[in-house]
Structures are given as structure tokens and as C-alpha cells.
Length: 393
Image 1 (cartoon, rainbow, N blue to C red):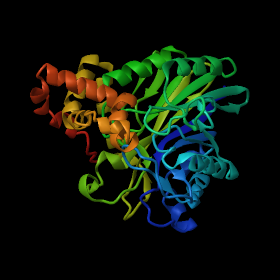
Image 2 (cartoon, one colour; image 1 turned 180 degrees about the vertical axis):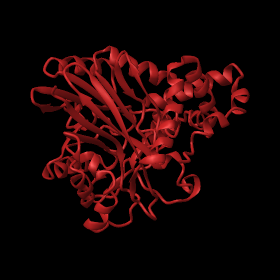
Image 3 (cartoon, rainbow, N blue to C red; image 1 turned 90 degrees about the horizontal axis):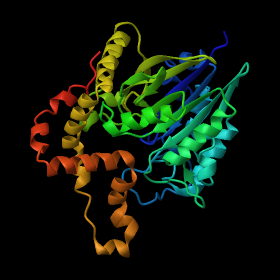
């Protein structure tokens, strides 16, 4: 039986590095995980920052702007990455020049890119992996934050249900399997929201054969839905930060994640996961988990996957999450007539609440909880989620 093995990894970002390490030092950070890339036919990850040596002036946006020196492409080359997904909320942080410089840099290093382009049609084009007659099309799509393409604007493939359905249908006309590589969800929440479980399952119903998610900066669980895998979030792939504040504890779930290997035949798809840990900027080395540490992580992953099949429990956990983040986002909803003259700088936070699907769901649910006077009740339950924000192996 012919089997195609594709490895998917999540967010890779180098923007916190003050300097580009030497090639040998950069390679050493990834020695532990490199064998996993070598044992699959193809590999793909999400590049969470442009690799761009030009203008340091970012766009006006909500949240940080991310970029890194072009020399960091060496890390992707060392891992033999075949495709970089660019559909995320940071590819457009330094405007069109940075987008196309990154695309061209990747191409010069024999790395394809998807999820971004000169317009929305180009951004939605799939990449097709092919082996011994098996064709697998991958679509890279993200939520609608900043840098989203339009008919006459370069950028990334912002999610649109009709366009996504059409892209899946067209991809299935020439490919045996279609995988949706999706950047979205509530950051730092170890559990998906009710809206995300409904949406991701519906994307499978539309014809996708697997759904691979990321963006939350922490691992979320996965499920097999109607025989097809849905990975809600793999967590960060590689995103070292200074060990301070909330990230001072290297057991924080920020530093953990798992790569998803899909073993694909024309008859079925099997899923294997490869968990890892990476360090802070002080020692940004990756560790592929094995032995007891891997076993402990897999138990953690199972624990956060169990509630996904229970709609009431997922709703309960999301209500709790809203009491930790929803109030902050809701506070941004304050219109000012000054926005009419100085819109970008004044409205970017509120725009993000409305445009980004995950933020919008968070705010709507939080406002419902305020309206029905349930905030205090769920605030008292925050430990139900907080216990999963630290992973002790």
C-alpha cells in the first residue's frame, strides 16, 4: 500500500532574537527534532514572522508586529521544510514589500509558500503534494485580523466560508485528499471555543479530509470526526521569548507543542503526533520528547482532548475563559468620532474585535454573560482552566 507521510508544524517565529546566531548554533537548536522531518515525505510549517531586512516601520495594528532577519531562513532549510504557510496575522505587518521579499527568499531556498499573494485569489491557491500517484492539496487560511488580501490588495488568505467551500471543492477535483491548514482560535486558551468546534467540523463536512490548526500559542486537543482528524491547535512550534513575567516558568504551555504527521493513502488518513519542548531565549533549544516525558505529555494531550466531544463542557470552559480575556477585549468597544479623521490608530483594537472571528466570539459571549449576570459565577471557576496552562512532565 502506498503511504504519503506529511508532517505539519505550527508557528515558527524569530523576532525576539537580538542577533542572528551562527549557522552551526542555529542548527543546534533543532538537532533533536530534525529526524522527524527526515522520516516523512514532506513537511510544512507556519512562518509567523516575515524574514525581511528592509523598513522597520510596521503597519498600525492591534498586537505586536513581527519580523526577523532574512538569515533565519537557514533554520527552515536545515529542517528541509518543503512549504511555509503564510496565512497568519503577522505576514502583512511590514506591508507588501516584506511579504514578497519573504516569498522570494523562501523560493530561493527551495521552499514553497502558500496562504499569501498579490490578491485574495492567489492567496487561496493550494499547494499539492504528490507521491506515487497520490495527490494531497493543502489550503492555508487564517482568521481576519491584519494583512488580509482582497481582490485588489496583496496579503493573506483571510477566512471566508463561501470562498473556503469553493476552494475545497475545486481542490478535490484534482487531488485525492484536501487538508486545511488553519491559523485561528483564542490565544493561550488550552480548549477550543464552541464556535471553533462547530466551524472546524463543518469544514470537514464541506469535503476537507483533515483540518490542522494553530495560532493559540499553546497546545489544544484533537479529535477524529467522521473518521477524519481535526487538530484544534498544535501550539507554538518554535517561538522563544525571554523567561520573564507569565513566561518565566518554562513549564508554561507556551513552550510546548506537537507536530502532526498524517499518513495518507487513497483509502484513509492516520494521525501521529510528535511532542516537543523548546526553551526561552536564554537557551532556545528544542527537545523532542521521549520516554516518560513523552508519556506525560500524551496524557496531558488526552486530558485536554476529552472535553471536545462534549458540547456542554466546551461551552462551560469557554464561559470561564471569557472571564479571563473577554472583559479586556470588550473594553475596547468604544467608538469615538475622532476615528473618522484618524481611523487607523484609534480604531485598530476595536476593528480587530469585529473582524477576527475568535475575538468576535469571545466578545459576544462575554457580553451575553454580562447581560445574563453570570460573569461572577464563572470567574470563581478559573482554576479549571489555569491548571492546564502549566505542563509538568
